[in-house]
Amino acid sequence: MQELIMPKLKREESQRPQLNKVDKGIQWIELNRGCKRGCAFCYADPNYKVFDVPEITNNKVMIIGEGFLYDPKIKEKIIELGQKKVNGKVVYYGLNQGIDFRLLDKQIAELLCKNRFGILNSKYNWQKGMKFAWDGGSNHEQLTKETIDLLISVGYKRNQIQVFVLTLWKIPYEVCLYKLRKLRGWKVKIDDCTWNTNKETAYKKAIYDQWDYPYWKAHEYYYFRAISRKRNQLVIFNGHDPELKTGGLRKNDYTLQK
Ligand code: SF4
Picture (cartoon, helix red, strand yellow):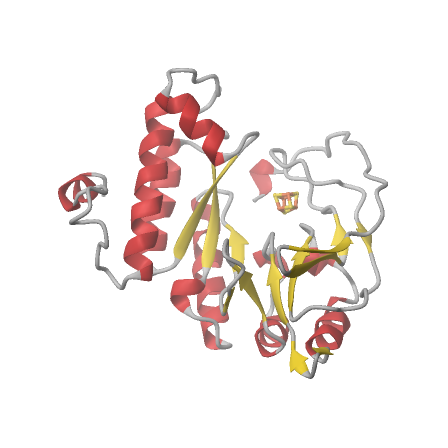
């Protein structure tokens, strides 16, 4: 989003070696590090670098790194990784930070889906979905919709597509609510990511009256978190609310927030 692009902030260049470790039963690797885009709110290392494909030793691999599609050899790497086998079985890949929808085209989308690039969820189960961010305002509404349609057209599941929406930054609460409604209408999930903190910390500060974030009010974040969570449940459970009988946000509360 153009108005969010500012001169690149001076950030520390990370000199640590390429990540390649097995933890919690999956292999974590880096194929690239940082991002060239330089969005004003983002702390990604602007000194973008790429790595060779490491040895793959596990059937589930989480790939970290923000600028996945900036790699000039990314198509070759997707194909190479897709051909890997461990113990005679294919490998499933999760893209932890998702993809940049401005760099996605039909060929790349097809390669990603065909070679089992998707989401490894919080329980490290693989899902045939994809993550990408709608960080800006309504000027990216059309591209968001087109990206969802493209992902579905190549084989991804609608209710496994997850769209990051940045909260607590200068994109106002009302604009984020609008995006949330659009995502609900398109029946995809939202990941309400937080600027400069994490969800748990922001939620606790909202509850315990310790709010010190400059751009959003505590109650705005509190409601946005609750509605995002509820709408994801409605996407996952095909419009049914699994908490109606267990004390979650009630249907009337949900309706009031529309
Ligand atoms: S990682 Fe995403 S938010 Fe960060 S600079 Fe790159 S495009 Fe912008």
